[in-house]
Image (cartoon, rainbow, N blue to C red; front, side):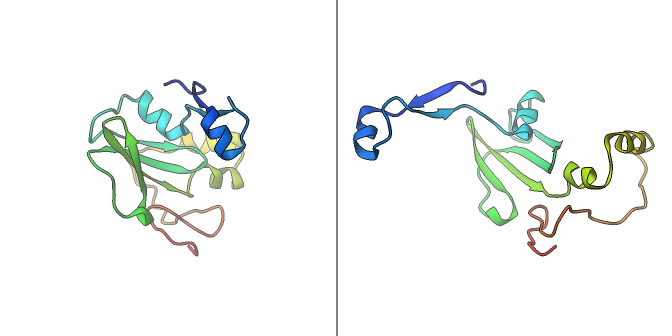
Length: 138
């Protein structure tokens, strides 16, 4: 469903049981930017995957089943399959902390994705990481 589509409202029974006003909107279809990227890329079968660089760096993969270790990532139903992913705090938010848009554009133009940079560091905007290393003190 498209984001913003109404999926449900509080029923008369739920109103009696909870006190919420009847017909209150309770659900809207929505998604995260990285899931929208996955859908837009056409990754709909197991093995399909995307990486999305937003404020965080996200990896999403379509799988046949869920992962069983949430400390290393997450999974949720995605049609007949499962969406498995992880998000790193080492995303664009860390770049924005130190660089403005002009500097990011200038430096990005000098990168060649086929050549190693020689850099060996893991930038984080603050202590704590979730993926690929689950360490609140990193």
